[in-house]
Every structure is written in C-alpha cells, then in structure tokens.
Image (cartoon, rainbow, N blue to C red; front, top):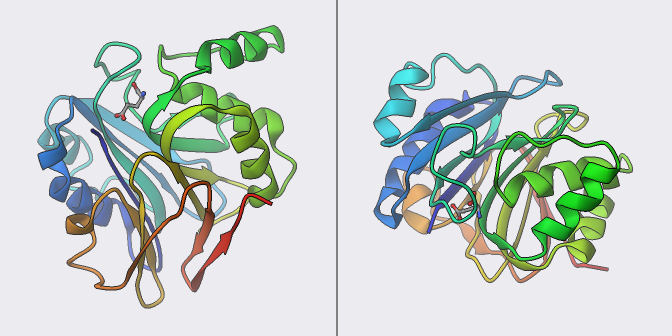
Length: 227
Ligand code: GLU
C-alpha cells in the first residue's frame, strides 16, 4: 500500500507533505516523491528511492520547494522496479499535469499504446504515468469534466491526486477501491490515504465515495458525482 498526501492553502506545502508522508510510513513503501507548485508555474518534482528521510534530505526538509499547493507519495511498486524514475508524482508530457496514484490501472497497456500512437513518449514503466498523459490528452480546460472523461477510460483500483498548472492552488482527488480522505482545515485543505496524516492539522475529514470527484482549493472543497 502506498501513501498519498495533498495540500492547498496559504502555508508552504512541502514541509506539510513530508510530515503527512511520515505518518503514512507504516503502510510500507520503496520510494517517495513530491510535486509542489508556486502559483501558475510548472510543478517542481523531487523524488528519492528508499527511505523518506532521503527525500527529506534532498529537499532540505521541504525548504527547497517553494509553493503552497502540492502532492506527495510513498510508492509500493506494482508496475516497474522501485527506482527514482518510476516513483511518483508523474507528470504529463507538457509538464502541466502532475499525478500521484495508489492502486493499479488494469488497462494501462492498452491506453499506453493508444497514447504512443498519438505521439506521447513515456519516461517510466508505471501504469500511473498513463493517467497523467491521458489526462493531458483528454484535457478540455475544466478539471471536473476532464476527470469525468478520465474515469470513463481507466479500469482498476485507484486513489488519485491530480494537479494542473492552469488551475493554481487546486487539487483534484478521486478514488475507487483504494482509500482517500479529504481533510478540511481553515483556509487550507488536504487529501490523505489515512487519518494519521491529517491529525496534526484537522479533525474534520470526509471519506470520498467511489468515483466522487473532489476539487480542493484553499477556501473550500467541492464534490461532484460522475455525472
Ligand atoms: N501502480 C503504481 C505503481 O506501480 C502505484 C503503486 C502504489 O500504489 O504505490 O507505480
């Protein structure tokens, strides 16, 4: 099982993401990574194989990554060896979409081949990178309708945290057969695979329903159903 955390608010995201990931270490993992965004700049992604402490060191406790919106991940490899390239977050080809994923995309090969035919090139061996590239391919400017189109195409088990640079300070979360919680703070909101990652920040949380789409901003969370 992997761990997912996400944050959007007015504070620096990276130290909060690293702290949340440390509370999910009990779930087991082989590598870890962060993607953090400052306004509408492309996400900065840092990954490290092995212990979370390697990522903590590499990012100077998160201080090397500036920005108030981000996603973090501890990976338990299912598709592709545990290495830095296969670690999450994964970006789409144009760099605008960043994705963390827990679970398995069963039809990833079929989708990957379709995307390769369209000219997409892949860096990793993971099923997750397909989600990032597919989101870019389906992207229509709207996070909710693009996520709906994505859910029509992917099969399997997933908890996903998705960011797009066109939508500063916005996170999208969706799940099926993998846990994902929304943490509700004051002027800040969170996603997490499990409660311990949230406890220091809020006691108010919401368990996402299957294929319910959550759009988080610092001032609120909106929920959409698949339709
Ligand atoms: N299937 C994905 C991978 O191998 C996610 C694994 C996980 O849940 O950590 O990268």
